[in-house]
Length: 486
Image 1 (cartoon, rainbow, N blue to C red):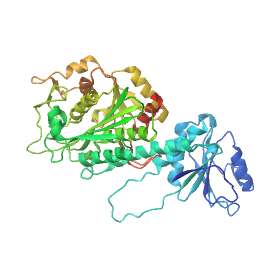
Image 2: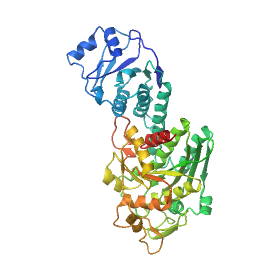
Image 3: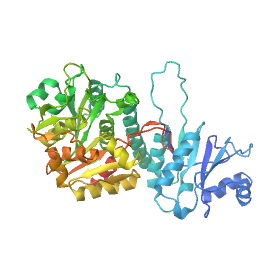
Image 4: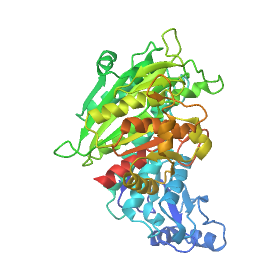
């Protein structure tokens, strides 16, 4: 629980206290607390017993001088070097080490580089992210009483705190979906999750079922689904934030709930992680949730093509030809390049429903991991102005994005098939670029950004803002972009 607190009495405060300390300036609240502790804090600082270097957290035991059992002194470094990302990191670290209820003296973290309102949003977001615990199926796991976080400020920051909490909760929602086992999150389960949220907020929602897909000619998703016993879903939710449903941004997320690779079978090592191949859908859904919960004056379509990619006697084979919703035929030379096939129909359907702009997200290629590693998302676009606006949002949320190239020769390389309009995976060509070029064939002139999150959708180790597993990457950036557009 995170709650605003407008007043604090150091002598009678029963929760533990969290105080930020810069190396080059002292906040009046620190001096008040120091006085209540008979100058113990200032004396310790003078003797360098309390470090003020960034992210150094020192517990002080009041020994009955005040009601609090513990005071955490949080080193923030130089005030001139302190920024929103450092605030996010250090608050996340505080949230992780807190075992009992705490009151964070937020104004002691104010370096004047950012407003107290922005700090409050970051505080709500960071605590929510850092305290996320993956829901599991363990039968003997102990239930722990959650820590209560009280955020003290003399200014009114409730709305800002709430905004940060919403950002964090939506990101955690994406994390949880990505962490779910493949047998617990089928296309049907994913559709139900979206429907539950949409119904709670009185939104239009529907799933295009297999029979209607056949009528609409969605050969991309139907082809990938051929080997599965689970029915495919084209999940669509609509959010109208303005009087007229126009200037619509579509969030199209790859919802591949498990990927064996099909007949181009993946190696055994690590295949269990292919439950996370719906990370694009999870992040698209998370960003959609933020917009809805904040009542942003924007118009959105959430489009999630969802299936798994399995092997059976009915499964698609290398060399098979399919026809996508927009009429283009594709020779499937690689059944493990399936994400682009279902996204092709998702993008076409989004355009059919009136999308003015498209952002698609997908754990699409191992090549992007080789190029950019696991901290940076690869981005492709056909509209530089659109991308520049998006990049500004990424910088504000400190989610790293790097623009990748797309050239006319890349589109030409896709036309190497002897039997179809397109080849889904030309041999010997750069994988991430070819995947993006393939999607561009279906976007055509609609302003578009493609985010390849194969390297950033999950992490192998815990960090300041969460545990290992799903990251919910790009939820906050897309939501911030939508806020800036509002």
